[in-house]
Length: 145
Image (cartoon, rainbow, N blue to C red):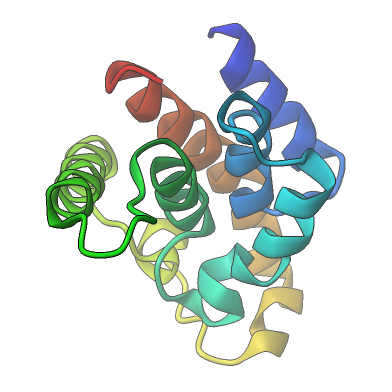
């Protein structure tokens, strides 16, 4: 395991969610203050709190936006590059983990925010989520981050 993966796992162990943990290890490299990154990504954990797209994936997509995102009006080339990088990430993450959906990765039907309080879900979060955080970091690094 490399330094960024370990740092992301440590962030997760310290109560940051999966999106915060992934974005947190890349944000400053691309000009975003870490505290701002943590606040931005706070609501994205747990598949936006309802088991949808895994927070590790959304945190990675935010990092991709920091590195490749378009911001100059009508810069379609940059916009297309960022979109291609996002698709590349999703394909690689899905290839490594079988899905990008939190509920699939946790193998739990998490459709209500309170579902994260169920004992079986809490246990799955302890085991699965650190691995998803590390996977997202690893995939980003394989893409040149």
